[in-house]
Image (cartoon, rainbow, N blue to C red; front, side, top):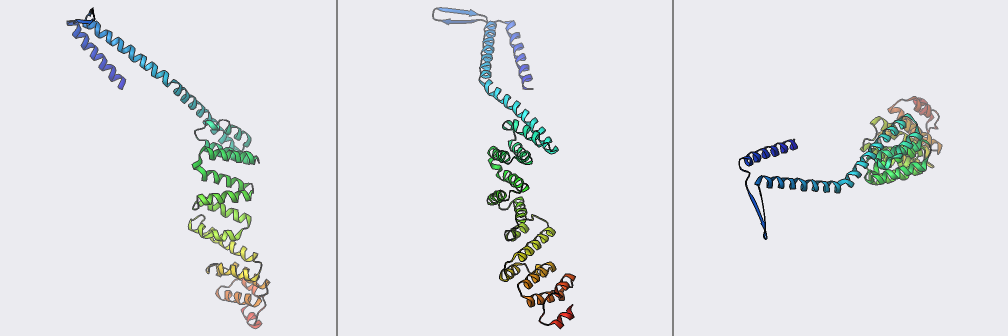
Length: 314
């Protein structure tokens, strides 16, 4: 549009000047020292226009030559990025189809030219993981971090997922420990830590993590209740002595101390450590509040201070 308006104005101006010069071509005299040059005004204007056009053309040519290397470089980068994008698409499709080796090959072929190297290297790391190539997987994860250092959490989460999937527990623990220092409130970091502690059977660490899991709504309420019960049962079952057992029981929230499964677990462990009478009183109190066949069965096997009272309850 701008070019059209400029051409129209130029044409209009040329026509007006031509009409004026047809009436009177004018006269121009140029003197320099003892020399004098004379010509018509029309020829002078035409000469100036020609000189201006030549000068403008030379300037444009010089500017074009100056910009040529940069434009050529930009064109080459665009061409490389386009090829990389096509290979990324192909690699992601192969990754989804389970063709791990081919996916890795196509993903890394032009990874350095990709306009999204983070996604490229993370996908290549997953492909290498599926082939059991842990060294290549870690290399791609390192390259992903170097390509986009600000994506430290995304790279770390991918690394932790892959380590957990391949049961590299110590490495996963170190990765998630680092992630928790830089993103302590990240819900998915907490969820992966939860899974790791479950797989390790580290119930003490998981018990300390429970308040944060609830506060950040990492899992729904029903799943959280099941997890909390699992943690307390495991800690009661692993208690090496009666003092530790009672300490774990005191750490159980009062609402959970009414849970039948936890009561049965605690009473059974008390009986194992020789506190039969204390276990019997605990189960008898629980039966008065809630009749349950598990409590009845356990109560019948406990030694009571008052057998007649025990028989009446049973």
